[in-house]
Length: 439
Ligand SMILES: CC(=O)N[C@H]1[C@@H](OP(=O)(O)OP(=O)(O)OC[C@H]2O[C@@H](n3ccc(=O)[nH]c3=O)[C@H](O)[C@@H]2O)O[C@H](CO)[C@@H](O)[C@@H]1O
Ligand SMILES: C=C(OP(=O)(O)O)C(=O)O
Image (cartoon, rainbow, N blue to C red; front, side, top):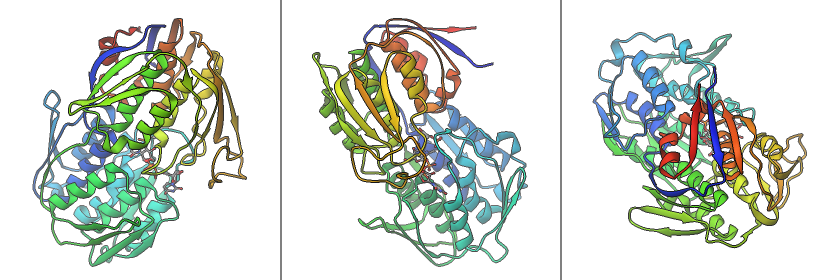
């Protein structure tokens, strides 16, 4: 049964919350720890569903996982992995996209890997063709089966020269986790360079890897025979921080996000300012607020880092419903990330989606049948409604809309939001939101 949250909206969110480590780093660093023959320790780890899912997968492979939730410290001991069996991980199929990143580490440690069907947000087709072709370049043999894929490396894994067709985050991580212990050198061009990837590289370096990153999206790795353990403090979740910033803007509020870090949020902060939001960066975090008066419409394009992240797009669109004029948002990372706008239209928002590449440069989704541009016309008061969470960020965006709307909304399927937002209910209450889970 899907959990339902009753939201009595119309009150500006005000107060202070803390954001801990990034989902998109911590989950990958936990997989990286599987490569190490000594224990690793990650700090600033948030209590979110994706951490739970990856902990479960690691335990199935013989890793000892100890998580001190309060302290945010997770200890991972992979020293006995070689004696474990290649476990049947079907139990976790469909809950996350992380299993695909186990390929390299499992091939290095156990000689084979079973990867179940993947989960993650349904915001496009989300193929894994880049991942599989990278693994094949290293010499892996991929056997597709009805329940997932079986991967072996009969002649071991050897470094290769690879160019990505698009700077995919997951494929770049796949390459890193495979190359660090492969024989010889690897070169990846057109790599993704998101801050979470840079942090993963830094963590792998502490474990003993040799990796260099050039300014032109080229990553070079020299394989080593052995990796040990390392200690690393996760960078803050910049998607969560940006989501709370959008909640402040959409509700006319004022939120101090402790832990928020300016460096990974430059593109977001520029956009937030252009829309008319105010912010103040301090050593403790970033305070975001609506300064009063009108918000301004903008033209925005999502992009790979250092551009405006696609994961900020959904929460920002809710705030744009309160801006004066026509905003244009061109989604260039995922072909199908505007599904969540349907519920917003039902709440009174004026949002039209288009197949054309609007407002900027043509992207790879142009001339295909994907509704990947949106025109938001505002400001429109939002009405309370009964809505169903479609995916992680779309779900948080629906919550923001319900909080901004006058009246009582019921948001169902809120469990998905725990994949990436630690204790969001506690944080909402700390900000003065009137929210009540329904049985
Ligand atoms: C757990 C995690 O870190 N998730 C993040 C990661 O997702 P994820 O790693 O899945 O995203 P990618 O960067 O790989 O995807 C970008 C684009 O590349 C395409 N593609 C990707 C792989 C592939 O084999 N073939 C292919 O065509 C995808 O369909 C998508 O259109 O980066 C995204 C882009 O910043 C973020 O929105 C997600 O929050
Ligand atoms: C798309 C996202 O995550 P995932 O890749 O885990 O589905 C997200 O965090 O918004």
